[in-house]
Length: 297
Image (cartoon, rainbow, N blue to C red; front, side, top):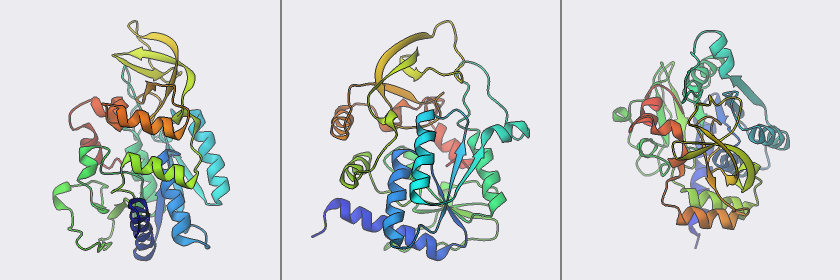
């Protein structure tokens, strides 16, 4: 009998193969985080011994953790796949996106402009991502194949039923699909799979000493991208990050967890959700859903 993780792996491989079969030009959105690393491993298995048949793409805010960017480039070389990088800074230079100002300024939401432009530039008809339903309530509403209109927008009320694991990739001209191979996985499933597959992760997922900014009860990585105010306190402490988003909006956890087992133990004991450390999700009750409606991944 297959165990729980084998069932999830088989489902994900089925989804990835359906994407390859049903779409003309799919792309795998790759951030260098644990979820996209997991999807990359699943894609390897889905098409082995052939190469992964998707181009990878990263929307770089320019404010990413340097450890993640270094890891991204190393893994892409090992996988032997093509990586397209599009930069939020270019969208700002072209006056398509406006740099935020003030204490809470972040480029995280500006990624949408750059992503939608890149989808149009390359004619991608499916974007594969590592989003999971357990991350946040708006992501729980997504189908496995989630259609975006020709403006890149999402309407949760117009989603198609997905019965008996039948995935319908039929789209009209100009539309595209967001495909979520690990939608049914939990954070614990991902960590368990990473342990089982002995996958390497960026170092920021594990405890390390770091210069930080203590703000509003959270601790953020100190960087030139953070607009400091008088009430901010600069400290040094031992932390890890539960997600690898933009440095300006991804809070750290005070932690000594240096192994996968210790991270999983801490996560289980935590009273906060995985995205509870994302400052951008706290701008309003429906912050992520509003960004997703506009085209955010």
